Length: 326
Ligand code: XMP
Image 1 (cartoon, helix red, strand yellow):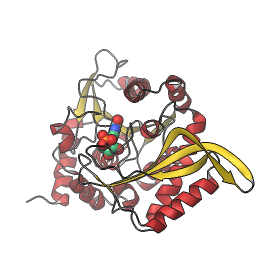
Image 2 (cartoon, protein in one colour):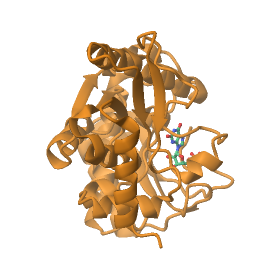
Image 3 (cartoon, helix red, strand yellow):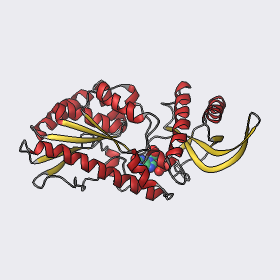
Image 4 (cartoon, protein in one colour):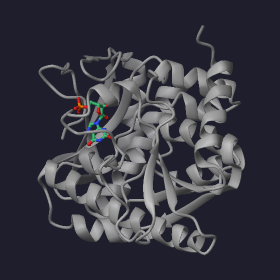
């Protein structure tokens, strides 16, 4: 009989036996899966798990600070945070092709992660260890769909080896959530005492805001979209809809149009609001957000975000659309 308590107990015991007195690393995204995986492993081996959290320059507003706080203070995890935003944005300069953006962010993430993992394991090598462990929050749907178009976000493919790892060291995977579906992961998280704020988070793509900024990704555009996104999330939550929709977010379009603000003519960007209902992200219906909520979102964005003067609503389902715009 499957219960969260049984699962947690047997998984923790298994990990403890596997890892022995070794060390593990885990890439955190701030999302449900990597957080639950990390907390489970930390239950088993405590501070011998080091979590790595990377600012890729395309996180949500204040997310780099918030996730660190949640993970350290809220969950008691041992977190190394790397602020690599500029490094990512430099690589993204001039790039407009969606798949190129994904590739650049994926490769850069692996490079940053490798450097950090190498440092951590080099430090442990003096302790005479030969096996290093890599924790990933892979779920059952990720396993059966490993050939999906985009691939799971912050996962480093199982064949990937941390490049600079000491020669005699082997990297082995721990994937404690491999047999589970999302709702089971949330139940485990609850049983582990994790906050709802983390467990109920809407999915957020690994390439982050980069695939919600159509055209070139620049620091200015990221800042604009962060402001608009913050307003969307705040208003969706205030309306009690955050958990009812699968995802709700803003997309920055490289389209400028004319507007008026007081007695000033404006010429600024357009932002699209996207909200969908879905079971698993494979198919989705556009969500019929109440007009009042749309009205508030629209007027707040136009009046508070200097640089956006028009808001439109995306009423495309998947298929034939995708959830993200890129
Ligand atoms: P689409 O846009 O393909 O999105 O309908 C389906 C789900 O996948 C998420 N998504 C991604 N997640 N890396 C990710 O980790 C990606 O490159 C990526 N692209 C899309 C999207 O947010 C939605 O939940």
